[in-house]
Structures are given as structure tokens and as C-alpha cells.
Image: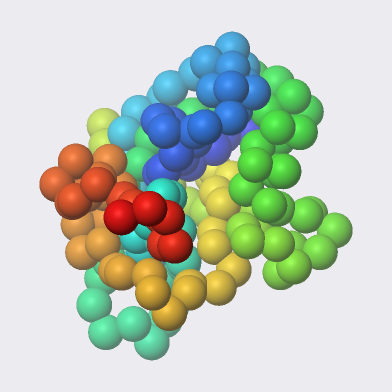
Length: 151
């Protein structure tokens, strides 16, 4: 069975780990841009998405890219540690990997099942990204400065 990945953040651009960049470049193929139901948060150097809850009063979307994973073993062996994801204890790490229905831009009425990394806990300092688009958001915000660093 073909596996797909919905990527919305640093996996696509901005990963500081060369192994992540190599795994994405060598072992995935871009399908289309698209979106999933959920909320996207700015966590400083990277984003975090959470699924849309049934009690959410408004429809919110996370924008990203749908990828075909050509070699799941190699790709997820690199991505799971990068995302601090433990499939045996999904709520223990920073992210958990689950399936989601992703809507390709070219055929939104025909969602595709993809893997996604959901953040397990939204920290109190996180800011909701109303547009749901991490890459657009990063281009329009002030540069990120780590806390406690030199000013």
C-alpha cells in the first residue's frame, strides 16, 4: 500500500538536520499542495498542528504539501526521531504520527489518506496562525530569536 505524508512545516523547508532534507529529497515525491482540518500554531522555530475538534466553533485549516513516500522505512526512520515521535508511546513525545484526510488543491473533493505529525501539547506561548500556512507566516513575521540568548 502506498504511503503518503502531509507536511506543513520544517520538514519541507527549514529542517536543520541534513538527514531530514536528504530523506525528503531522495525518498518522497510531491503530489500537490493541499490542506487538512486543524489548527496551526507558531512555536518559534517550528510549527505545530492539532486536529480540529468537533466542538470548534469555526472551520480552520492547515495548509501544506502532500508527498508520496517512496521508501517509508527510510523516511520514517529519520522523521520520527526528528519529530520526537515514538510510535510505541504516541503521547510521550513532542509529536505523534497519525493518519489524516488531506485535500489536494487539484481535487479537494477527493481527500487522500496521509500520515501527519500532530503536536501532543500546545505550549502556553504558542500563537495561533490564522492563515494555517506556516511558510507564508514565517515570511511575514519578525525573525525568531531564541529565549535567553544574547540580545
